[in-house]
Amino acid sequence: MRPQPLAACFALAFALTFGAAQADPQSAPPAVAPAPAPAAAPAAAVTGNASAGRTLAYTCQGCHGLTGYKNAYPSYKVPKIGGQSPQYLTQALTEYREGKRKHPTMQAQATSFSVQDIADLSAYLSTIK
Image (cartoon, rainbow, N blue to C red; front, side, top):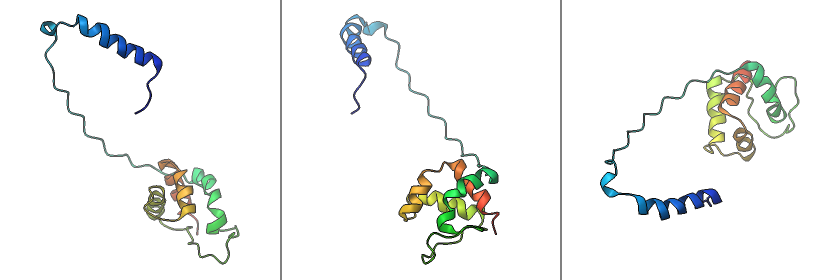
């Protein structure tokens, strides 16, 4: 249980001490059932911005060896992500972020990205050949 601020504790104690003594059950309004919560709206599709994704892709370059950059792990098999479809890249990054795909480095990277960041990265990386 989370500790309450001191003012909230005093307000609760005051209401219980003085409010209950003054309440008249005859004058209490009838109980009203709460309104049902509205259904959650479907998430809007996020459009990626390739130029913003280019900036974010800086952290991808060391391992994935994007065009024009050297791979930091030449003997370690790392998939080439340049030219992949935006849908695949979005799904992969989202699954790393949610822990559905297991790779500590990729999970750490993906958890730092927002949904918009992932869309931006996917838009940029899909344009690289």
